[in-house]
Length: 285
Length: 275
View 1 (tube, chains in turn green, brown):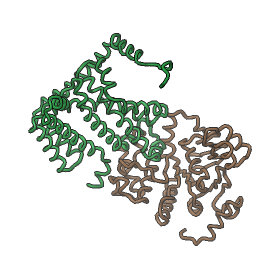
View 2 (cartoon, helix red, strand yellow; view 1 turned 90 degrees about the horizontal axis):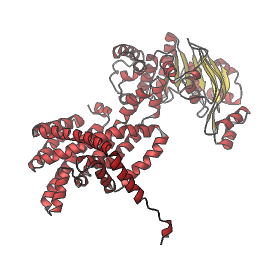
View 3 (tube, helix red, strand yellow; view 1 turned 45 degrees about the vertical axis):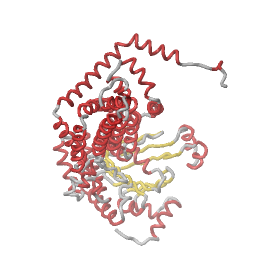
View 4 (tube, chains in turn red, orange; view 1 turned 180 degrees about the vertical axis):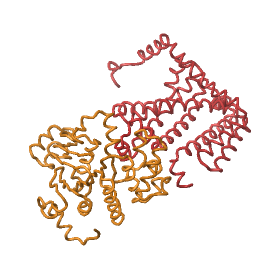
């Protein structure tokens, strides 16, 4: 047995810290929560407000833009149609809004951090272990404090999704930038390019395929969080799955599950298409 | 016009630069310093005067420090000790902004493996230097098309680098350096990756351009034939030290030591394949 005298628990201090955070800085979290809620409701309002066929057409256009392939474009249309036929349209749009919000915030946070990680050894040494923790820590551990700070509903669900889903984007942004041919960067420097000109004109464009692979991973991981997110009150397909399981309604659960899979396939193929290097188009066309 | 003077430049790669530098000044050789300090001596007390309007060749085998040396002229590499004078002023004193202006307007570079930007077209690559310094798209296009034509790539301006052969890529690299309109062009083993026939063509073209434009060209090579063919003056580098500086005739007739003599002999033993 490990001697009791050496026991030291961080339970008390952590609980007190969270309590203090809630009582003293509750308003800060409330403000953040309010802004995020407005944003996600706005996205949801657009997606649910638009006629269904317009949403399908928009996604087909995106699919065409990303892949230039008719097969994918038609498949995307058919898959969305299937979602509608299964009676999941509204739920899917809710889930999609949640996903989009989580993805947008992930990009806003993840890409700049990825750039910093690629550029600075110090930031790198600090960030990489933190990412490991974010990816391995069971999500319920941070779901509960998120709940305490932000209340029930969409916002803590989005935040929990971001914590789980942003690491691959940071990692792959870092990788993408470090993979850029050193001699090309050297050439840009030799012709007098400023750090900003080199970052936006050379490094980011050349890292785009890798960053898009990261975005793809982020979206896939975010989708895998929807059921967990529904446990703290996020509406959508996840809630339906949860509902189905709780009432032993296997069919209902399966339907919603299929909806999530369809969403995953569509988003995966579209982002993969955007991830192909630009010059590849020139080669094929 | 631009005279370049490199004065007592040392470059040490590694953590313990101070100790290694002191050893290098005491005259210890490269291998011994590496064994004792773990630091590698890139350049060891290099001094050179490069006159304006000529082709100055720096020759040496791999690891002799020639690529390191040429990167000191536009400060892609900072020396550990020493001065690099450009028209009499020390470029090591330039702040980041002045350094960028210096690189934009005074000195451009051609790279061994081309270093073209794969996501930009030939034209966009060629005008990079102009665009960086703020030339409008329209004006840059005119300049770019002119140099693309000069290097013999008319009609390829909208292609991407991966659609070109090695020789064509290096023509783009050359056009990019020329379009930057600088007095000095640094060429780091610019033709080494090309096959012999194309290399010969490129050498001819470079000599032709030099006659018409009278730029100062600092040309790095490991090939004595190439050095003799295009250089008005040749510096031979070994283990980060200058072994001999002189005209092609000097090098052939009066090799400074065995090392140079061996190069020259090897050359005599080989049938001439061009010029």
